[in-house]
Length: 98
Image (cartoon, rainbow, N blue to C red):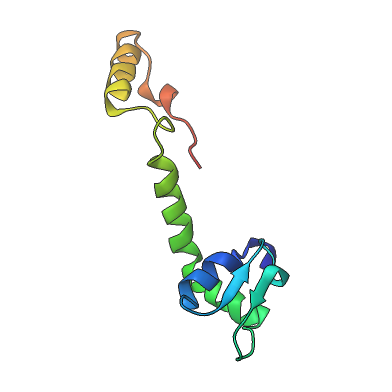
């Protein structure tokens, strides 16, 4: 379960303004520099459960916003027109993006 947790995202969302560092994807990669106790792995996993869907959606939006990642609207219209002209179903253009 904790293999899917992005501890950096959790720290950024819930501990902004606190003194910490994140060197990698694991809980042990978090360096806590506050005088208060470091949040436990279980606390961070519970917080991750509340934001993981939003993080996944944001990442999809970021990928789609990358230039060259997806065809332009004009390119898609031309492709649909060409496929229709060949008597094919447009579903032949559908690609699994996830």
